[in-house]
Every structure is written in structure tokens, then in C-alpha cells.
Image (cartoon, rainbow, N blue to C red):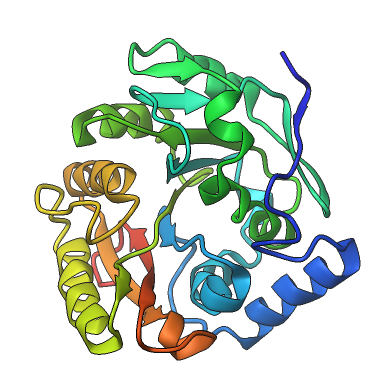
Length: 268
């Protein structure tokens, strides 16, 4: 087992200087509007370069303030962008490094899901993958010291993903975090219309009608929606915008959304 996965996209997707990175994440969190509600059971957050998606991601992470003492682990799933894999892959490391330090892997949780036939351990799918890595600095600032079970999701079914989540579900001490952007490279108004439809499907826990045109993380996201529906969770929209609203032009934009899931009888 390689002890630590080094950062692959520091200096590209987010700052590679420790102090600058900490200040950047802290500023996003300080400026995020916090919707009332308790610590969610699950979050969906985007994974683009911070100047584009950081404010939207912060709308989810700000809900985790003061949650660290109560959390045992974070189950982090994101789509495979660079390497095709069958099923889901663990990185086979004990820690994940960013300029902020090393975030520990929950080895007990990783060992538990590794027994499932759809889960393998492989370094290559993780080595250059950004969908998980860009979440790590936010986790390190919002939930310092809380370990993660990091899984890159490739060719899998929603049912296979839901089975992994169910195995690690536990109680309020486990947070499920799904990393996904929404639409890609549409004109601004077209993207807003598509993302509105996608957001409505997420709010309806519609696990059967999401595809990768609507969300690059459609597979892990659909797995969460399936598990959430079975567990009686409700979804709340925290923030839906696109790169045309943050730092890009509006001719070709990427959509982002943050959503929280909880078991409250009232919509969280």
C-alpha cells in the first residue's frame, strides 16, 4: 500500500500555497449563505476550479460548521473523468495529501466496502482524478481531522452505489458526500433550463432519470438518491448557479449545484 496519494491538481483547480489555500476556502465559507437546518446526512457539491464552483460548494460545506466533533467519517464519492473503471475504486492509501496537510483515510470503512464485488482497490483511477481531490481542502477546513472513505465511481449501477452507501450509512456520525457538476458547455440560458430540470429531479429523489449530460456525477448521485428515498430522506436545494454567474463568460458554461439531505419531517 502506498501511504499517501499526493495532490494532482493543486495549482490548477485550487491554490497550491498552504496559506493562500486556507484563506481562499475560509473566505468562501465566510461568504456563503447558511440555510437554516441541522447538519445534513448527505451533501451534493460541485468539483470545478474554485474560482468557478467554490462559492456554490461553500453553500454546502457551511452547513457542516461545528459538525466535526460528532462525525466519525465522510464517505466521498465522485465520477471517474480520466480512467475507465468497472464499478467503484478505492485508492489503496492511508492518506490523501493537499497543501493543507494529509487527510486520513478511514481504513475500517474502506476495508468494509472492499469486500463488495463492485469495489476494487487501484491507484491509477485516483492518481489524476480531480472530482474527489477538490473536495479535500473544504473538508480539511470544515471538518478538520475527520477521515474519509474515498471512492471513484466508474461503470456502475445506481443499485451498486446504493449498496456501498448502505453498508457505510451508520447514524449521524457518517456524512455522505457526492461530488458532481451539472450541465457542461451549454449557452447560459440553455444551461439554466437544463440545470433547473436536474435540480427538480434531485429534489424529487428521482434516481431513474439522471444521465451524464445532466450531471457528470450522475451515477454516484443516482445511487445517493436511491438510498435517500429508501431511508426517507428529504432533499433541499442550497445553491444552483453556473460558471457564467461566477467567473466565466456566458457563451459556454458549466452548471453547479449544492444540495443537502436530511431525515427531518420538515424540508431541511
